[in-house]
Image 1 (cartoon, rainbow, N blue to C red):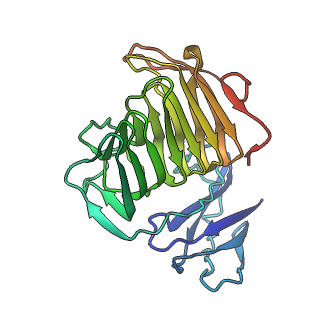
Image 2: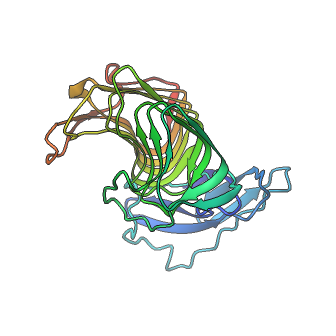
Length: 322
């Protein structure tokens, strides 16, 4: 089986040590792809994986250094039960590394509040809280790196790995070129938003969301454009069991999504919708999943469908899955 990968090396990125599984349901063989350090303006090179052989086609740019693929021993090539299931039974996971370069670091002792209607430009500094991720334990309003009040905006910032919650939005807010180097519980949570209001995410990206990138509790619309999410459970989830439920809408355009479970999860019984255009997903199980949500916080929502239905999950041929 042959697999073609396109990898961009990013210096000092926590995902520079990558794993690619070349497998079917009964045979796993793993390869470690170590992205060589490159200049800040790293370029791309195509790697062809066929069995245990790797052949690099260098780009003309000298900044990119060839990735090296260690050869497998005979024992390693034998079919073995998977030690890591990944996100699919059939895992062909090739991560595209493209975290924006950081201009410095800042450890915040408390959540930094962006006042209503105010703007904060982070200058591409990497911000975090200097605490270890607690996994999927729900964080509170004291835990995020940034707390944005209604109408506030955050731009040109990187959320570092040492935090529990990334960004909380207490109303309609705007994120522009905001990146998450490693998601903990949730990267971005819209806590409150009224019907008729829109929160915007423009550019940026996130890596390593075991569960969700965006948790949606408020009403209204969220617009996500030109965003990259890599290795994720869900890009977007409309809360399925909040005490107060709303009709919620998400519009996604220009998404790049390698390695995930589902792009959007919505509650069809509350009139939610997900409209997705001009987007590309690879090794993703579902583009859009509908659930039957509930306002009983102790109950879990039930999945009731997936795929383009033209009413709740809306996308066409310009959304590709490979």
